[in-house]
Length: 244
View 1 (cartoon, helix red, strand yellow):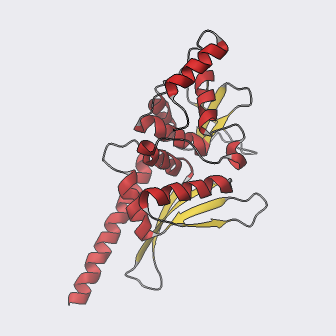
View 2 (cartoon, one colour):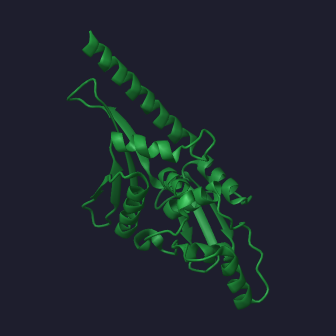
View 3 (spheres, helix red, strand yellow):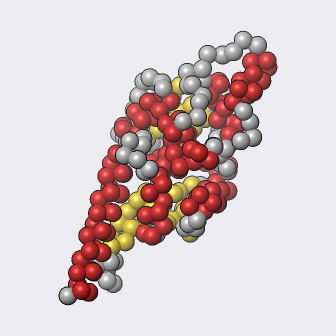
């Protein structure tokens, strides 16, 4: 780590005088780091140097964000762009200490295009990745039309920042020795997509969901586990056909 939390606090106290009262307890844990993954994808830091916002279509995810940071912030509703319906759930709170901590690890205002590496401990990196997956990642599966007995699935991480997606690919490669591949949109407002096919996805999820109690978006985990069961049944059926 490039910093030590205790030294960081002492520096802030010396610089500011009396220590501000932070809402968020800054202490590394699986839950805390998972919330950082959510912030790195669907969060926003206001230019005012104080306020943090998290927005999601999933009420469960916003509640998890509150719980993982140990806060009880009111959950509001908001619309997006020209839409009139308030389809999104949103949390906003002020915390100078937590705001400065986020900047110190690489999560900054206007991060969409500027996000790069995020300085989280190796011990909790898998929790951060799971937060990124739940925040702005996706998982989908399908039967390959060319071979009816072949069941496929993919895991995707999306970011508008090429630097961040390359960093994520490199860190996952170091952890699991899987490479994935990166694609991009051809539109003016480009996004970058880090994608893992079935074999690599299986290896990835064994690490991300390392026990049944890890904090996660339940509907996404259920979807993934269902796909794994379908794939297992398909492979068993294929073996039976070969044996027959």
